[in-house]
Length: 253
Image (cartoon, rainbow, N blue to C red; front, side):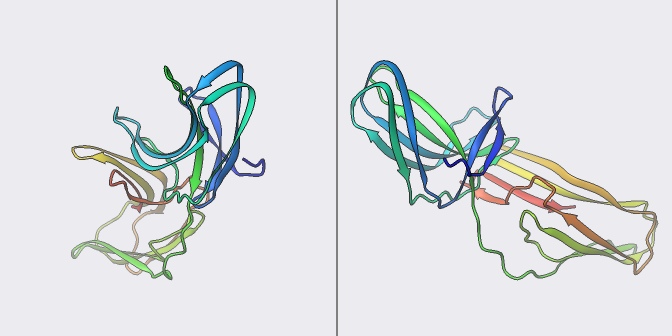
């Protein structure tokens, strides 16, 4: 990969980090593989695969495979010394963003295999995929009503239900009816991860941002402005039913 390509640092199982190159969804994967063998090594072929998996981190179940593309790099022969093999994996759509969560991950990787009679030699290289989609329809204000009949009626108005990762959530809280004291009010941005197949379904909720927006009892007609900057939070896109086994959504509480 080019030295100018974006990278991310991803934790490994040995608690160290690895540098992973970032690719866009339709971008071709081009490069070369250097094989070094001090002794002559007979093989039945060399192949390279681009794989996409949904992997469940808490379960000992096989991953769900959503992408497989294979290239044959060499016919049967032998390896000795230093040899380079060029590859080009083009015209392959990578439809989902890479993701690393608490219970599940969406993983893309290259798998290089030296096919042998007794034991294959396998080396894997992870890549990180980002996808881009056109902006949603023009933003329409969203209104959420919260209340207890004849005691309190609160209206939460915000600009849209769709935001990009560096957007700003802007809104207002309207107190339409207040007939009992309210001590304080908090706003919480929550990420909810759901994965698995019934009955083995894991749900995980994580609070990304929580702060107090009011201290003391409001009066009827009072308005509290809301502004949440998303760029400072480590957000990912929303995932909806990836392989019918994984979803990720964001909520304002």
